[in-house]
Amino acid sequence: MTGYEDRVPGYLTFRVAPQEGPIAAFAEQEAWQARERYPELMGMGLAEFFHARERDAGGWELSEYGSDTPQGARDSLGSHFRMRAREAEDAGDAEAHKAWMSAALRMDREVVDDLRVRGERFRIVRACKFIRMGRSGPEPPRPSDPDPAEVGEAHRERSRTKGFVVDPYTSTGLSDSLLKLDLLRLVGAASGTPDDVRDDARRAAQAYPGGVLLPAVFTVSERVDGEWRSHNPGASHATPQGARDALAAWLRVMAPFTLRLSDEKKAEYARAADRLDEKRGNSLSVDGIRFRVTRVERLVRVGPEGPEGPRPSDFDPEPPVEVHVRQLKEQGLWKEEDEDAPVELDERTLELKALWDQEEVRRAAARERRADRERR
Image: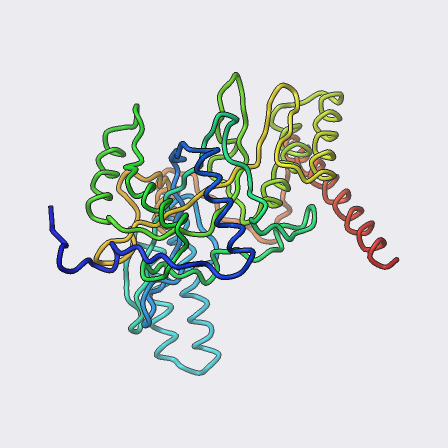
């Protein structure tokens, strides 16, 4: 074990400072209360992945949106390179355009998690996700959590991750520092975890012993047969209302479609969604299932070379796009699309489209009612 008695590396330093302002003080108080009410920290299993750019001033700036697979973040980084190439082309910089497009095409062909383009360094970054549990179940949103969106409009809110810099030198409040310490102590491998996942977690704890907390996100949990579980493990939202909107859409659209509900059950689920919209609560019961909007903590592990990247055991089912297309062609599963040919929808797809069309009509009517109230 390396000793750091004389000089502690920056990535192992916890910088604690008072958080200024009444809202920050309120959030600090709530964080302390959460440690008592929801004392158990549990890993969610699936990680979240971002592409990040190393800053000259220190730290790594994350992309606005994450993905539930490393390849999703790589594809997003490839899109970022294409955008930079277009900007260079518009500026008349042929050399820069060539470099950025070359990087984008490389992302289409190869699994790349760390690279430099024109002096800038980019990396795919992994964030672990955790929830707090108590006697009553998972922790819901806190009153201090930003929740500005109207019902049905949360998708328009900017992600709190946009522009976030992973930098262990940034100070935090005492409660967040203690939370970070608690999370770093967790290897994140519960009993029954596959050996490769457990081994990767242990290696990560050694190679990336420091960490930075990201802004919390929100998901939906469900209680079935006395057990809490994630309703949609890969989905998270920037605000509590985003999670409520997702649950309401599931109740009105996806539940009738996937569960093949009767007309009576469809109406029951729709009434539940209406209650959720009206009360903007964090708990809802329907058809014997209890749902709860749940607060999710996120941690990026950091080591001497920067933030942690994907682990070999992370769920990553799809290869880069060019490789995937080649595999499909070799298997005889690839079909060239005729842009002028009409798209034919099967019966089930038409059924889903009808449900979404109904939901869009309902949302438009709700927006119009809000606008009428504001004009009065």
